[in-house]
Length: 265
Image 1 (spheres, helix red, strand yellow):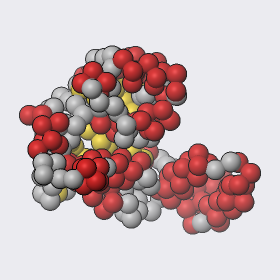
Image 2: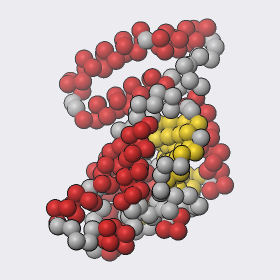
Image 3: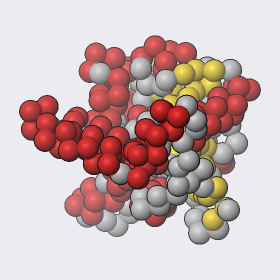
Image 4: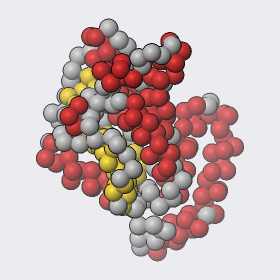
């Protein structure tokens, strides 16, 4: 089912998956404030959906996202105080946080331009597959700006050493280099992108929906706290899952050497 509710996105729900397509192709899917707000809204709406196991994030017509639409952002801020402008630009953070905190697996399908804020979206994905000829860059420094809102996600994704160079030079690089830098998990020929994404979704069909949500929460928790502080939570999580209906079905299926029957396909 395709949702008609959004101005800048195409949202298709086909449980257990959802597809979010950034849909401003005339701007290479560059983000304006409406798109930032709609990304945040879609992920908020999907958050409680137990029937959605993964979300594919992609761009329309050959590009993922060329960053922020600078002309639109400047026009939207006219007449604002500096404090209002700061709040306005922080709407990108709401979009990034909503996607980053999604309990579903976020799969990024990356082709064409993957720059600026689009680069940030790539960095919050759980699984990123790029076309080997995709064009990645953090070009802000070349126009007198800085990738300030996306910086934490970039450094966490690829480490400080590479982030320093790429943020400070703004150089452009392709999907194969993005793989070497640890930004994406695979780089494939552009005509193989869809089949590779489909293969990943087929893998995710085999994973327990509740366990996926638990692992997403686990990842965020262990990243934010020292191991000693999370021991009780981690031990309890194993037993909570082990005694759940899903865990019982998964272990029974393993012992019987059959495919588990999850609550949603």
